[in-house]
Amino acid sequence: MAHRHDSGGDPKPVLMTGKRMMNIPTPKTLTTARLLPLAAAILLAGLGVSTQLAAQPASAAEEPEHVTGTNPYPYETEDPREEERPGIELPDSVTDKLSLLSEEQIEFLESSDAGRFRGDLEKTVEYLEENTPEHILTWVEAMQSVVSAQRYTEGRDAPNIALNTDSPIFNAWRLRRPASMDPEREAGSISLGRYNGGGGPPTFGGFPLALTPEDLEAAEVDVAIVGAPLNMGSGWRDSGAQATTDMRVRGRALGGMDQYVQVNPGSVLNIVDYGDIAIDNASTERSMQHIREVVREIGNTGAVPVIVGGDHSLSYPNVAAMADVYGKEEVSVIHFDSHYDAWWGSPHLISHGAPVYRLLNEGHVRIQDYIQVGLRSSGPDEAAFKWMRENGMRYHTMAEIEQRGWEATLDRVVKEASEEGRKLYISFDIDVIDPAFAVATGTPVSGGLDMRESITIVRRLCAEANVIGFELVELHPYLDPTYMTTLNSAHVIKACLTGLAMREEGLTETHYLSPVSSEHAVDDYYGDQADFLRHTEALERRGEDDEEEASEDEGAEGDEVISPTPTP
Ligand SMILES: [Mn+2]
Image (cartoon, rainbow, N blue to C red; front, side, top):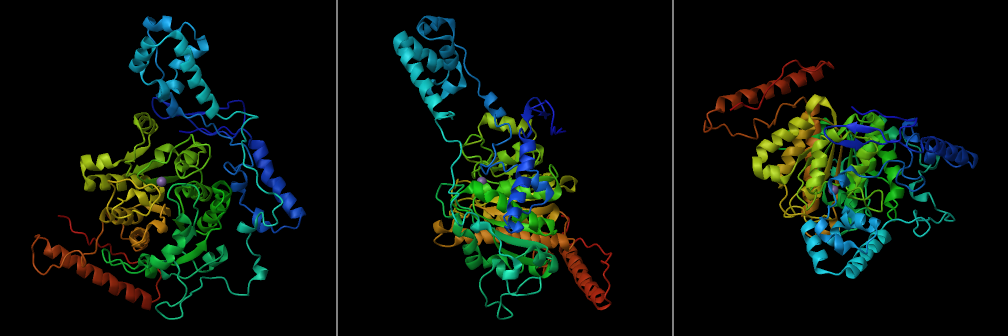
């Protein structure tokens, strides 16, 4: 149970979740942080600047702008995982060799700071035995100078990157045009197709467009697919800024019928393309608050945001926005990735390797409500795995899949993700999929999920768990000459839309598949032909009932529960 302390003398409340403790956030500058947005709003109002820029719901106004550089990062950033990397204790046998070192230098030599230079205890003792005290002094001083030089030093190092405040277009990138500048139109979704079957400019899945929260409300939108072409948080094989365009042009597979379950998401749900979120692609930090604002406005209408990235830094504003809508510690996250993205020590507060750590550290999501799937990169190391385990984070690595098999792991993951009907956000890093199927990504790692597994688990999660948001990140189309990664990304998003539509239709039972598409039933090869035929008839009866209901204009749902999946 976490206890938040918003004021008072305790600067470091702790969360007991096992043997170890985890720091939970306490804003150190809460008063200032609360006043700053207010002061900014007053200033903007005084200058006659459109309040659309400054307007934020109260919950967001209380959030300091953690990673934008306007305020100091207010949370404890000393990471508990570091304690798992202990130093060494040198034996008396080498005391003579340390005769020229000060107490402080001996302490440093034994510390984990010196570890990556001196090696383990055995290696260090060997080195000390082989060298003179004079040489050892020079050796330790060299290590100390490197460690000290790489740390931030006030006065020497710049803590912030200055922006050009003289720029006449300082905020233009994210400024929304006042409605009075638009041609008059009624709020609602806008169909861009010239013909029944399309023919207009490309949108996600060919779905109609919506531009404002009023459009989402008026069209009673269930799912808003929005692009967030953030590029700079990766810094590695980048080109994610083109992913949202590419997905609209070449990713049309994300629309249409799903054969496995015989559901067409576009017929069951009101799905729209909500355009792209404005990004300052020279600054990940500057982009964060605006992304959070747009994702929040989608969530506030009751629609499920489906965010097409962009790099994985997006998880931070996206999940924080879900916490703005549903409350802190109210949302669970399932995170598909070959990396665990909980790095804390980068000089940048946010990057594609840090969103999980930021979300946990700022208290948006409880660590025990985080589920990781598909990890297989060189990290986490043993200390980090222990940190995850002892704080209650569930993880399902490729090692578990190798050990237990895919089917068993799949069932376990879906069961965990759907427990207690908690609200679930799915973060899908395309690099969880094997590079054989998804090579166009920033940091590919071999040995991942295949497409059959990826489609199944996403469809099942969106049907069987209470999914309130979804993101697909790290697609880099410039590395995708055959469009295969874009195609496969589109199919992952389609699996999500299908699952959401199944949930709307009440098809939430464990691993539902259509009795028609999954078995020809011409003979009785598996010995369950009768079940399939009966379930098929039940489906048909339900279809007739629906038609009757529609013709009688009844709003109530049918009572009959059908169970088309046979039990073997
Ligand atoms: Mn990632």
